[in-house]
Length: 266
Length: 267
Image 1 (tube, rainbow over the protein chains, first blue to last red):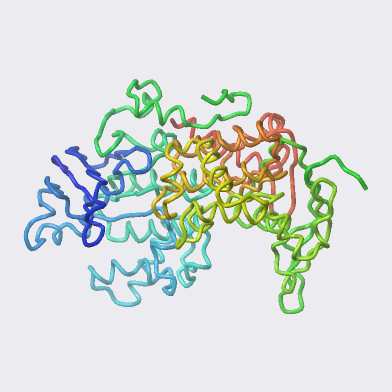
Image 2: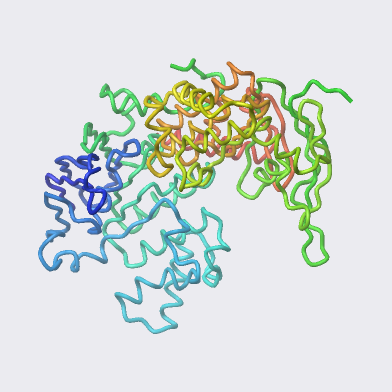
């Protein structure tokens, strides 16, 4: 469904910062495939290039080199014909739920936006669809008249998810969707995501630094470090025993489940 | 009254006036922290954790809010002190580490100049001395190039680095109490571990007491000696960290613990 082939990217300096462009490559020859109905975890520390890869997959950031093909259409062609064909099948949910929505819009308006863009619905029909979507993500249809400031973080993330599934897309890029939520809501949102995946037949690209979330929800995991995929596995639960140094660094940073499991600081 | 507690909060109440009605935000809270101890404060959003922190720092707006109760730091009553004296206590005797390190620094000055300014506000050091001390403590929190960090602007450093700069400031001033309000929520897991390690160093080497606010029970399990669980402006459970994990008394505590265990079981 999704093929990423030898993608490289660097954020070079431009203008007055050009001389300081020592940052170098953010992505270095990254390739992976994603088949329908699969949840691929992209695991790595900050600065590993996870989010850049997410943006490239979404068609938001043209890579310096390499190809991204979604459903047989190449995303970055001249005139951007490819991306127009698959735009509605690619959706995203980001970490900061508040900055992902317009604070002046109601939830109905937010969720209805993709529907208004792609489907010709009567106002009554639109209202019914947004109500259904809200109920699908565990909110009430009446919540549609609320504005973002009236939702808690976990609720607003549900609104974002409702918007992402409104057009029944094929792939959702989840960029740290649970990192800003508290423990209880993290679990609830993960449950909701796995439920939706099965009921709609979605695929996910799940970007995170949280190894426990990856082990909970993902079917496959790719570990990124310094712009490269350094480790790849089809069984996320085997991650703790992986011997790669970048994986071990993440595994050793997992906090204990119980105070009696405290280890001395390394 | 003399007291041996580093921090002693008794009957701290905060109420807000909402059109004639008086709504409680905090309902008579009691907390104590001993020297070199870490008190973990957990609870869902809106339960009053941050209000508690602001109330201890005397940062609540007295015009809109009614604040009652006593806050003692090493036996000294903070609630009735004039602004001038409170300002000397903030930073000098109570350090703070906030969730978003980007907001804790002014974007238009270098990290070094803000560090030196803070040191010189609270001590009689010369600029040279302050700069040397700042560089030394930056090295101590594991920042490899102190000179480069000092010259950097906040946006040039990562969140984890800025958070460690905040800890370095606390190491220099050696406050009796550090209030860390969700210090690692905005960081990835590797950075989180480094920041926690430095916080622990602050406690073991300087005997600083820490009020650690977090929703992550992993952080609490790693750091805290005692834990207070808050819900709707009340402390519903206050126990030793081992007791809390082994024998949670309150429903909300159980729910928090279960949320974690479920994640582990599926894995």
